[in-house]
Every structure is written in structure tokens, then in C-alpha cells.
Amino acid sequence: MSHSRKFIVSSTLCFFVLCGVIVGLGAQMLEKINMGFGVSVHSLPDEPDKAALEVIDRYFTSLKHPKRDQGTPVESYRIIDLDASNSNFIRIGAAVVFKGLSEEMPVTNFYVVKEDDYYRVESEKVIYDMAPSSPSYGEIISGARINEIK
Image (cartoon, rainbow, N blue to C red; front, side, top):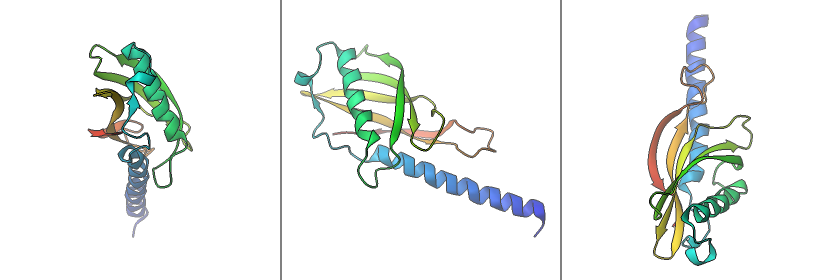
């Protein structure tokens, strides 16, 4: 096998391994965080934007120490923007840093949804391109909204 062909095969294999790691990271987005049926609206501030920020903070705090097999823990997060124009469906754009990764992931949308007397978090399931040689390195390469916490 020629040197260039070995490189291509190795690069392809590396890409698929990295995709597997990223899917593992995304697996935590599929797991339900143990917060009961959500966060009671009665335990939060009356202003929807302040309530949403408190709910998302609880959400990310729980992901800093996930249960076994819930994916890579969150190191930190940064709120980029918040849209509370619909108080029952508040969009929060956040950039997340996972433990073991030195860089912030692209902004992902999280939704704080009010149902009955509870708020829950929904997010977009995303896959980040983490192959260093890829032209779309560090970008979101796919996404679909999923239910986070019920």
C-alpha cells in the first residue's frame, strides 16, 4: 500500500473515531437529567428571562457531574443570547466547553419550556466536526431538536 493511500485510510479511520467520540459527547444530550418533571415555576423568579437563566444554570450544573454513561462532563458554559419574547418557550444560545477539550463549542440553542407549573430544558442534538484536517473543523455538522428534561 502506498504512503498516500495509508494516509488516506488512517485519516478516514481517525475521522470515524472522532465522530464516535462526538456522538458520545452528544449522548449526554439524550439522557434525562434527574430533576424530576422539571423545575417548579413557584421556586423561580417571576420574570421569565430570570427564571430561564436559573433553569439553564441548574441544567448545566447537573451536567458538570453527570451520572455514569451520560457523556463527557461540561467544564463551563457561556450565555450568548436569550430570547424571552414567548415566556412559555425561551431560547437561550450558549457556548459550552466540555472537560478535556480546550476550546468552546459553537453556540447551540437550548429552550426553556414551560408546561403546566414546570420548566424543562430542550436542546438541539448536535455533532461537532472535531477532525483537525477538516475544512469545517469546529463547526456543527448536523443537528435536530430533541427533548432534554421531562
